Image (cartoon, rainbow, N blue to C red; front, side, top):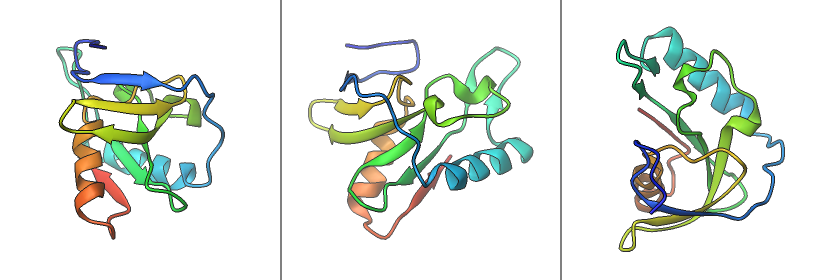
Length: 123
């Protein structure tokens, strides 16, 4: 199991560098608004909270903020992962990019799987 203290699922990274993606500005704007509202950041114990994902308009994949990025004031696309496949039964996902996907990635995948019209998940 790949476990960082917050990521409690198996994941496989394709090793493919995440390319700039057109949805990044929208994802980052939502993240900045969450930070402004105090819904994303790091608490006094050093534990991060809140993240954002955005469905890729061309596929069933989604982009999500990386694990541990709540401490960052601003992001670039390298701080995100693209989740390209997931399996709830095996507690597993496959991603692209060098960022470790958020510990809530499977939850986000569940929302996207259940509701095709959902474009963004914030929490």
